[in-house]
Amino acid sequence: MNKLFTLALLFSMAILTGCSGYHLGSSKPHQLANVTKLAVPTFKNDTLQPRLEVLVTNALIKKLQNSGAYQIVPVSEADAVLKATIVNVAGSPSRSVRNNTLRTAEILTRLMVRYTVEDSTGKNLIVGQKQGQSNIVLDPNFQLSERQALSDAAERLSIVMASELTEGW
Image 1 (cartoon, helix red, strand yellow):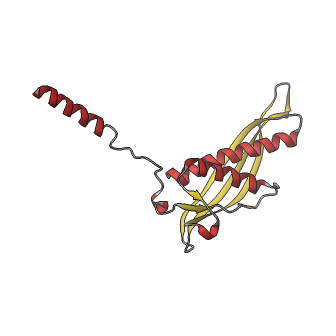
Image 2 (image 1 turned 30 degrees about the vertical axis):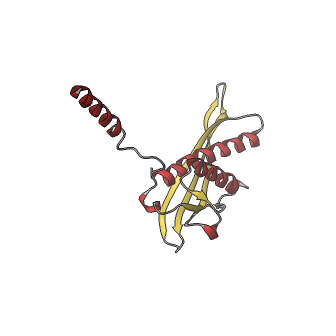
Image 3 (image 1 turned 90 degrees about the vertical axis):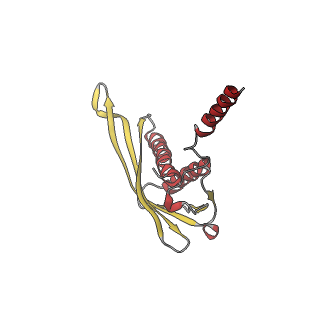
């Protein structure tokens, strides 16, 4: 009986301490530990690409909402505000057509964003710069391919930014 009790005690201790380093919820960066409500106004667009700011802002808001780390609210209700500017959009050929090296088959599109997270007093909590890129096979409709590449790059950029804001890396 005593051995059975000791064995049960050891087993229960092993179960209870096996996951002692883990915790539920997000592990926010220490600068944003007290932030529960975040405002994400539409990004500023310093590029010549039209309507890109809405595409990138919406992609980031969706990722932040999926993470559950912050409640996305208007600026008037927020603990902190994420202000961002799209500073560069660059497209370059990454692969040419097999029989014609002057004709592009794939393009590499890069988006670069600079951002700051400010608390309600205007103090910068986080300042950063992130990049998202996409490699898209060109379609005969170049404008459609370019828009798909921008959308994919915005999605990848939002993953990187959301990871930085919700997990600190």
